[in-house]
Amino acid sequence: SLMPSATESPVPAGSSNGARWRDRFERWNRKLHFYSGLFLIFFVWLFAFTGLLLNHPKWTFHEHWTNRHETNYERVIKSPATDATGDLAQAQDIMRQLGIEGDILWTSTRTDTSQFDFQVRRPGHFLFIKADWARGNATVRQADVNLWGVMKFLHTFTGNVADDPRNSRDWALTYVWAYSMDAVAAGLIFMVLSSVYMWLQLPQKRLPGAIALGLGSLSCGLFCVGLRWLF
Image 1 (cartoon, rainbow, N blue to C red):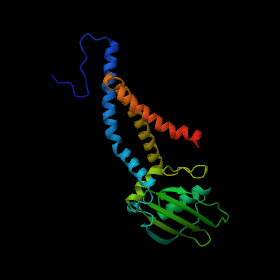
Image 2 (cartoon, helix red, strand yellow; image 1 turned 90 degrees about the vertical axis):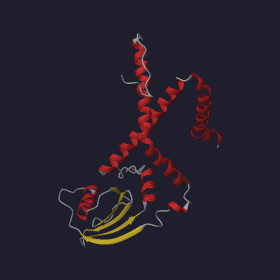
Image 3 (cartoon, rainbow, N blue to C red; image 1 turned 180 degrees about the vertical axis):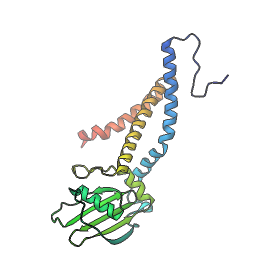
Image 4 (cartoon, rainbow, N blue to C red; image 1 turned 120 degrees about the horizontal axis):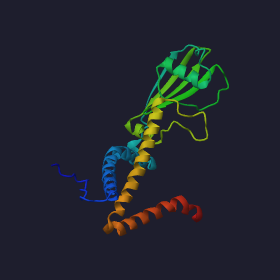
């Protein structure tokens, strides 16, 4: 017969239903904790490492914008399609004509209906587009950054801009990335809760665990709440 794995514990014969359910719960909790950690490891490293880089902008080895590569070009464009009503539809029509994909960023309010300026962002690429309906062309300035730039961009990339309802997600991959980050956040919450449960099942570890939990709570509380009272 097969032996139980390292993450499983045998259920004694004659155990009550409550004991069996508790044993199953503990077994699945350990399994999910183990595999969730393996799945999330590189996501956590990505955010931890890029957070460190963003916190130390004077470290020059990861400078990406200064070392960016820029390309400028001009293309002929047609007037927007008759069904392209509104700025978003017109911007998407221009992008389709130029063969560009990405998340649209509005940076200015249109004052001239014949001029249309907007930006398109995607990991590693920033495009600044100026369309002129009267001349029938669009000028594009494309800035490409290195891998450091891609990683730092992903750290803050949500497709939304606070206090600006015009800048919302309008690219399918933006939704995919945003929902992936929701899944990462939910996974980390689960791992924390499963860790607390496993800690409570080990009486010999409760005191040092309580000390670590207390210090962590105190440190976090200092920044979240205490600074309001101290400064």
